[in-house]
Structures are given as C-alpha cells and as structure tokens.
Image 1 (cartoon, rainbow, N blue to C red):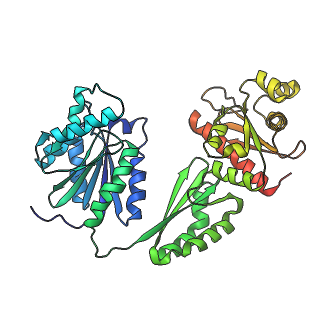
Image 2: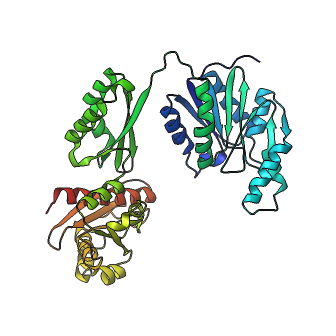
Image 3: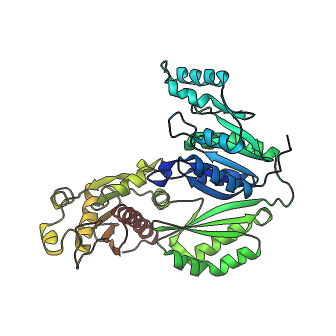
Length: 423
C-alpha cells in the first residue's frame, strides 16, 4: 500500500437530506473550531442529500482539493443511511458484516436497558474492507478511517455530540500523526461582538483597522446575525498580542455597541451588566410572546437578575396584568409608544424589579396597515416610574425573524439604558 500523503488541508462532507430543510448544519462549526485549534484548515464544506451519486461526487471533489476528507452522517440503521455503501462504491472496498462489532453494538443497547434490538441495527456493524474502526462512546454508530488514493477518509456519525467527541479524540490524533509540517503556520482566533449596528456601517468604520491587521498576516471576517455583528479575527501566533489593541480600538469606535470578546451574545451582555450593577429586571412582552424571557433564561444564573416576563398578548391582559389605561389603548392603540411606556411601568411595578423592558409590535404577516405596517415595534425601558426611555423600530423579515430582532433589540436597549443611566 502506498504511503498516505501528509495532511494540512481538510474538507468536510455533511450527508443528510434533512440539512436542506429545517435542520441546521452545526457540524461545520464544530469542525472549524476543533480543526483550527490544531492548525488544520477546513477549506470546503459540502452539503449532500442521501443520494449515492451526490455523496460520491462530493467526496471526489474534496479529495482532489485537500489532504483528508471527513464525512458526517449516513451511518445510522435506516434505509436512507447510505454513506457506507457510497464510499464502498467509490473506493471499490467491499462491505462485510463484523460479528465483533455487532456484539459491541448489542452490548451498548443492553447497557441502556434495551434487550430487544431491531434487526435493522445490524447495518451499523457493516465495515469497509481494510478500514479502521473509530469507537463511538456516545451512540451506537461506529465510525471508520479508510485510506484511499494516498489520502484518508473519516466516516463519522452526523449527531453533533457524537461527531464532536469522535472528531476531537479520534480523528484529530490521526491527523496530527500525518501533519504536513512544511509551511505550517499557527493562528489564533477571537470573536468580537457589536450590537445594533448595520453590517455595512461596521465594515465602513473598521476598514482602516482591517487593513492594518491584514498587513500583519491576519484575517478578518464579518458575520451578520439578528441585531448583532460578529467580527472573527485570525492572527498569526506571533502577533496574538494585537488582540488587546483591536479590542481597545473597537471599544473606541463603537462605545456601548461593543459587547466585547468570546462570542458574547446580547442576552449574555445584558446579564453581565445587571449583575455588575446588582439590578433585577422584568419584561412585558406582546409581539415577542415571551421570547425575550426565554433567551435570557438560557443563561445559567439568570435567576439572580430576572424576575420574570409578563406575556400580555391581548389588550385584555395589558389592562388587567400591566394596568395599561383603557384611554391609552383606545386613543393610541396597542402598538404605540404610549402603550409601550405604560407596559414598562406596569412590568416594573408588578414584577417587583429595579428596571423593566416592554415590547409591543406587529410581527405579521397579517395585522399591518398603512399607518402601522408589519414590522413596526415600540419598546420602552423603565428605570423608575419617571425615568423611561422608548424606541421605535421598523423591522423586516418573516414573523420569526421580526420576533427575534425585536427581542434582541429590546434587551439591547435595556442594556444600553442601564449603562448610560439615561432619563
């Protein structure tokens, strides 16, 4: 057998028809993070449906444009799990049933208290001729390492938790053994968050800084998320001290819009600000339907600063729970600055909190008008009964996007208001 070529560039093929619909492909994020930690470049990520021809063509492309290919997904027991068969056809290596592997799989089921093991799970005990088994300590689908045309293929399950564990503890050690040392250059990576600024504005304000970084061999990527821009910066290892300088300059440029480093989110930033100032908050939500409260309570320890969210979707509950006056609802409507202010005051009082946030709007797709179109959102923050800040936004997108942007924009308004002590 010819010696496998040294490895530097790795490509990823994610198999699964579901990845084209409602399932997010998180494995590419996992792979990028873990591979970059060990100075491997992930050049291509290809999504393919559960079709043998598509899998074969994608793997062939990745083999011709890299040193190793990681394939995730298609190793389960059902009819549409066909990665083994596709790689068998590509490489010409025969699939055979491993009694030892089947015994391990059955033992894994019994350890979970499952005695009756479906016959179709025998499919997971099929191995490629000459392949090396990669143990799956979390699930039942084992992985494989296959050498082909002086390169190497890694077949891993698509379940993110299983994929991550096997990539980190079994694939990476093999890659390190085969590392291509020449021209190897180590990089370190850091993320900076900027809230509430349009992507084009961030690019314009940071253009000079980006060019300075590129002159030092660094790379700069802008990622636009709902109401948040992330700047992903890679620097050569000898230049990593520049991160502190970049952080200082971004803080000077963006002020309170700058959230800091480490991929911090708007809810996390709000949590830190309220903790530092020893404040509690309460939300009054209408169009967001409790989403802001959900996002904040995803953070461990949020009970220290969050008293709760009052979801007053109807005018009846706005009046009953938040004590919004009938006259305000009648004169200005549920979606108005006046109603948002009254909701914030009610949330602060009845939620027994130091500060509060209220959000009301039209998430669509119905319910809009010429005067109040879909995407119109009013929000208010109450620092006291007399110190209230309000904001009007015209958001765009589908209903779920408008709700998410409104929730994040509201939490960001609360964060900024507390930081600035606005009246």
